[in-house]
Length: 153
Image 1 (cartoon, one colour):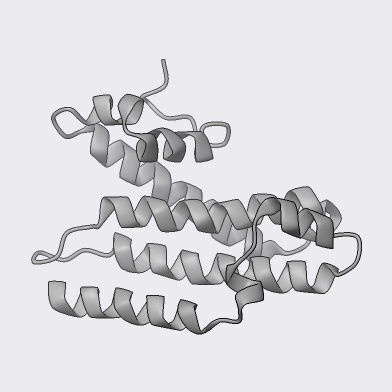
Image 2: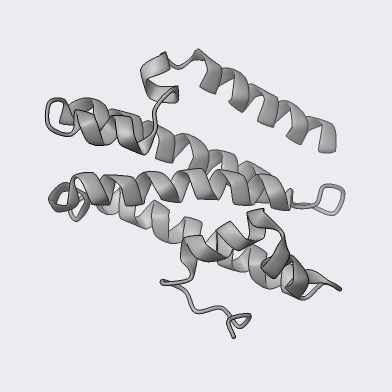
């Protein structure tokens, strides 16, 4: 039900708030600085981020007759999840190449983003969203080099 899905998302957010600050309060710059001294915290942060947002993406993307996909929630969570993979790859490329589970999740996130964008373009005005709405523009950019979309010029 919509209520159950809403509660599940709220539960996810409560779990996220319970993480130590080091896992929630970071940016690419701070992790880049840590790369020279503490690769373990980088791995832990990015794996936790990837797992958390991947699963949140799945909750938002789930649908049934009474509960539609939360498109915006799906794209937000997918962006955070796939960004964790690309940051791991940029900071620890040799390690990122062997973490096949991380790679697999990023591939699934790209597919999810692509599927959401494809469905949006089928709706009236959907193609306009891909050009004007910052969330959809970012989603398209997240995967544009990896999955060719029919919406590309």
